[in-house]
Amino acid sequence: MTVPYRRILIASISALFLIATAASGDASTRLASSAVADGQRDFDWEAGTWRSSVRVLAEPLSETADQWLQFSGTSTVRPLLDRRANILEFEVSGPNGRIDALNMRLYEPRAQRWSLTFINIRDGLLSPAVYGGFQNGVGKFYGDDQLGGRPIKVRFFILRPSADEARFEQAFSADGGTTWETNWTAVDRRIRR
Image (cartoon, rainbow, N blue to C red; front, side, top):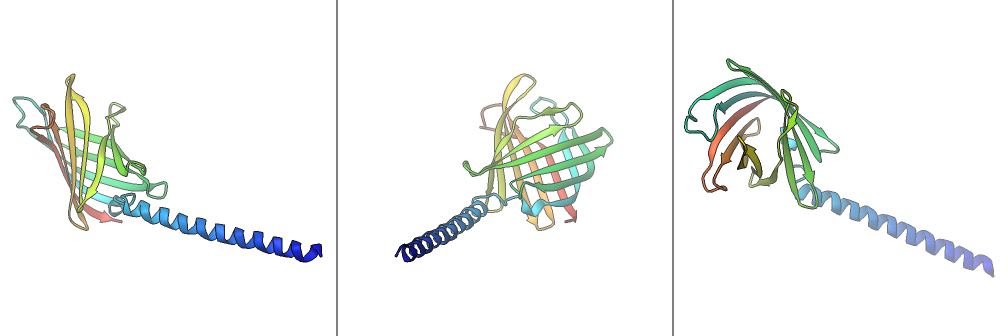
């Protein structure tokens, strides 16, 4: 008599295990699809190598802020950690020198936002991150920084006129975000995926 009960017990445990496994699989699928829907894949389009044309304002937020420096080169974006992060390698040069930098982007699933941290290779410093995400195809990121010892606000926009072109624009504000001065623009055109 104990044999049928054992078989029923083993069959019941096996059935519960299969149901639990299927449910966790469904939960994993829901979790993965919600991560995609909430912005985790916002930078998938950018993976690859791009030709970059860059304009940088020589003296941002100054009374003589009218000289723009020109640079050109490449930027290469590599996805990391199942595309929950990526790194952008940026190498441009022009008559006024070179800019070699990295931009580390990291997705924060709980906040459903990206942090973008610029790393200047010349001085080895990390800039404070800007935070945000994409809405209607436009990336908007905001943060706080300092310029010449005074606090400023930073705004960074990403626009995509086409699948193989992107525009990046950075602006600073010295008045808490009431007015903005654009100090960096870059137009990237895809070389390869």
